[in-house]
Image (cartoon, rainbow, N blue to C red; front, side):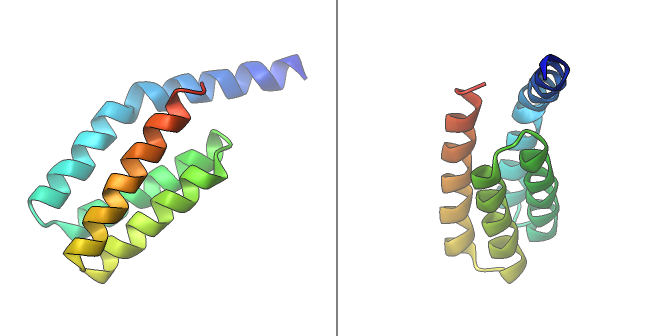
Length: 94
């Protein structure tokens, strides 16, 4: 049990360390209207959220991914804002 907690802690530390880069990628992709990059980054973050055992964050990332793939700017803006807020809340629990 202790070994699993140590592994999860290390995965969460690595995730948290990389978050600023991924947030920048999301914002840059949105600003440049690169919906493919935004969708791919959100897809990666959904997988990473599962790795850190946050299914709610993964669902939020998946919603962002699907919004970006739809090409609807307004919906994607809302999904991005919601994802970033959710991400910050999850990081606060690590």
